[in-house]
Amino acid sequence: MIARGTFWQSLGGLGLAASLSLPASVWAQPAAPAPEAPTGRTAKSVGTATKDMVAAANPLAAKAGQDILAAGGSAVDAAIAVQLVLNLVEPQSSGIGGGAFMVYWDGKTMTTLDGREKAPMAARPERFLGPDGKPMKFYDAVVGGLSVGVPGTLRLLEAAHKNWGKLSWQQLIEPAARLAEEGFAISPRLNGLLSKEKYLQNDPVARAYFYEADGTPKAVGTILKNPAFAQTLRTIAEKGADAFYTGEIAQDIVATVTGHPTNPGDITLEDLRSYKMEERDALCGQYRAYRVCGMGPPSSGQLAVQQMLGILETQDMAALKPGPKAAHWMSEAGRLAYADRSLYVADPAFVSVPVRGLTDPGYLKSRAALIDPNKSMGKAEPGAPPFQKTFLWGASEGIEFGTSHISIVDRDGNAVSMTTTIEDGFGARLMTKSGFLLNNELTDFSFATTEDGKPIANRVEPGKRPRSSMAPTLVLDGSSKLYAVVGSPGGSLIPNYVAKTLVGILDWNLDPQVAADLPNFGSRNGPTELEAGTEAEAWKTALEAKGHEVRLIDQNSGIHAIVVTPAGLVGGADSRREGVAIGN
Image (cartoon, rainbow, N blue to C red; front, side, top):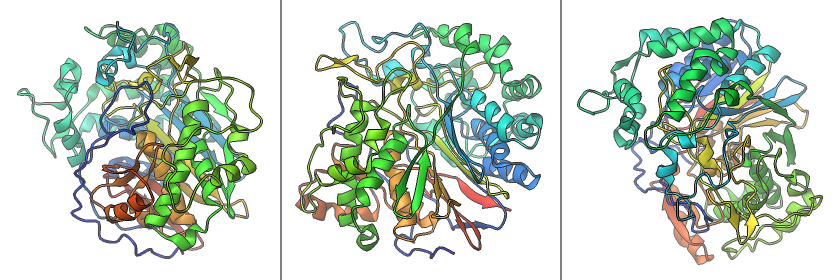
């Protein structure tokens, strides 16, 4: 059994007051607020189980997955049930109106599925430029149909079920359909986010569902029923994902997107009908005695995590322990990884991403050599990785936001790590008559088309998937056996959250609950960012002495991690959100 850490035991009553600021180095992209706002912390104990486990962002969703596992379902079966219930009880974060990445382990093979949203075929690079040729303000782009990408989550779930499901498709959908009919109690987090939300009430369908007649959010504990979503789910249960991508549901999506009164989009029925989920090669790399695997491009998340780990492997992180020295090394590693991310990573169908070079051990050692243990480098420049084709891109950071993460291990040792999203909290603030919110994923593209006269790799193009930071991760031990399942929401902060958690589990020997609850810290190649209201604030002076520009910000992660031990499964659910880790 992994030793229980002692570093971060007292979690109750923490105030997370600071608001998020984006790095000063953001290029050609409008300023935006934090991913999903904080709604307080809840102290949690580590979860344990002997057979199987689910760690997910809401207790009702996790229970649905646990029940599926108890009925003999696979990890994929449980993930489908969890996702559909999350769509209902945590609608601000994910759902069938969005996209997802899944990493799956069957005991022998690692497979990754790309259900990322795509730009409509009518989309053009200038999509988010105003009449003056400058990038639009963030929420001018987000709210309405213009930001909506073609959803991919259902195609991913259906493909995963056909490959690895054990129970019937209908059985997996029924828990969410029944809950939508019978209703569920609004959680404190959902109520808190509705209270802070400025744009959702402008959509008449969403206003009628989430708010009272006087415009106040429905109170905590109010039973919220969604018969339209129940009908949608039952139609999908009967007819499969095709019922979403064709027919009345597809027509509803198109009408909702194109009919927005001030900011219409251009998704067509053909865009929906022709969407395809992509199976991609898993991106795997060595970290000490472990094999760390995840999703490659169009996600930059696992690339950044593996670059950071490759740089940190040159140091004895176990000896550093959480504190200013560890924060220095992880922040400097983050600068280097985010610098490469900004230049090289985009949809591999449109850009030749030098994955092999960016993760080459020799290249990462050369990048590590740029770090001075006594002085911050400030802003890092992109490197020149080997094995790349010659091209010139302009750098672009992009803005990314909240998501949800699901970690599952079944009794056969199969595992799912899935990060899923509708992008910003409540997505495009468009709710279909079919009962679900639509994503604003296209604002994950660069708003600008060029930088310094060079085309930006992550610019908008027809049929293109926007770059992501999602980093669903599976870890194998030295015997190629499953060791850990890790991931987090958090937009462009995700690589830092996942890297911190992996270092906590693999180097600092912390159980996954303690590792998740460690203060968040790191750099996105701007300031060094320390989580406000935590013990990390005490590291500020020591880091500033090394030349760091330190910023105290909210870092509202939602880390869900499971570790396999000789005694069984040990799970953690981030105290910053309302998730749980439970099993049989």
